[in-house]
Image (tube, rainbow, N blue to C red; front, side, top):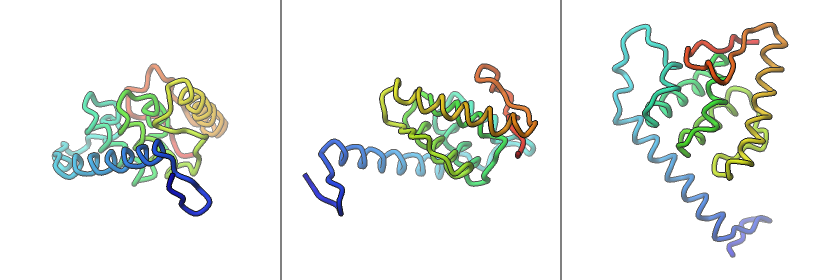
Length: 151
């Protein structure tokens, strides 16, 4: 076991950190070599959060986070349940950047544990944005891309 400060890293923790680093690197490479600048004028990156391609979803999620886009929050919460681990990681990072919240979410946790954290995220979105009188969007109709207005 390796010791870092007061934290001891097990082999499992080291593997998870390595996997995390690899996912970040792969996603960044995918964004650099993709056709990021080739969207027609007026096309919202929010619609790409729902893309069939994980690299497109990651690129759009990254943009939402960089722009700190509160209108993308509900879509990003949906992506916390994505089948692609990299998409889940980037969705969480964008949500944290936009909201400052974590809700004990771990993109690499087993589905039941992730579901508990996602429930907290959904309650936060409902409370934070609906309480401000702004429209929210249900999980099942999140394809429009226009989700939340700033509170």
